[in-house]
Length: 469
Image (cartoon, rainbow, N blue to C red; front, top):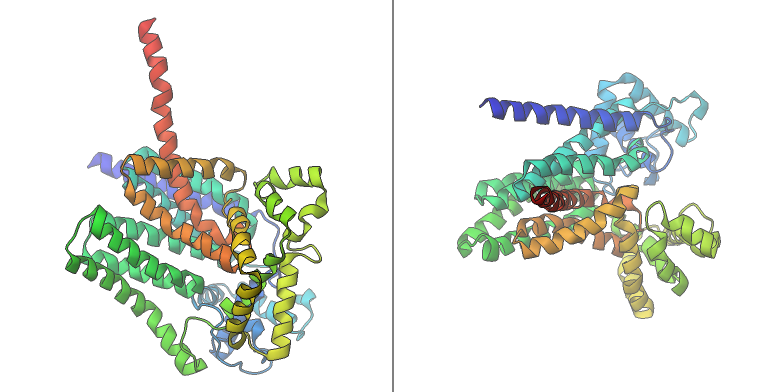
């Protein structure tokens, strides 16, 4: 028991240290104006919730909540805007900063009056990130049955998050999706390690919440059901009835969380679904990358290597060689895709009714280019962790091979959903690593396992030499 208490205390201290490191890394960043980047997308919805009790489409709504009550919307998931609302209820200064920024963005007041203040939401971000790191560490320990892997995986995950500290200083969803996914993946590992029907319930709840944060994660619901079936048939053999029961428990729990949002959308917006226009907008912007030239395709692989790739390619081939990959460059893929989307909106008002024809035309004319350009986009999107990614990615690949050879299928199951999301983002989004931060979990766990395997391998020869001497 004393050993157990000391272990719990050590892990609690570790969690506090991780939180302190991440919070410090976020807070030392220059304060961000609340209208910068995608913050206004969520803050405007929070404003409408606070002032009108309406979950709107925020800045995408034609009726400004600063003038009149907007119409109900469903473009974004409800979790993050409600977290912003909660933060405004706990800190009046933040509430005033949100109101001022939204009203200034709508030209209702002078932006000079507004304060760049978001401390409560930034503290919330650090807490979510720390929870995600702890979930990764526990998952790694359960998969590899090693306390050393717990500490290494947690440490690597923390280091991998630090290069994105500036991203986490914006009021956006990345910290929440990272945490929810990491905790959901831990719940899945625990449920599959010792299968019980009731253990699938929290898995379904957590993956449901993830969908309500970012709708694209809905694709993981059938993936998880597939993993439950694979585990039940080959890894932890169960009767067919038991496999069905486990899958059904997950699905029902998922629906209990997601269902109310679907019903609300049907009643308030008049459309069944998690979102509208969201997927269409992202896919139209993604089609811009199908204009990629052969040279850009080839150079993308060295160019996207973190820290070293872009400077090396710019030096060898000139800055213009890969300028279209930089979203802020005039004429970039990002700008071209957004411009095309905006023109379609101006001409037709909505994108969802157009998307089927747009997909059909794109596949007919440039389908092979769409498939090929997904390769460099996936490659560029997977290098999470900054320079540390140069070590994490090859160690992860090595860990996958070792998992097959040493019969560690649970690690492959743990890794499958983030890899699926990597492919999805390459197919429907741009190559930003911000969409693939959930890869940090399997990357850190796999790297930690490989490091623990290398340490005794390097010590044994030294020990034998000393014994022979």
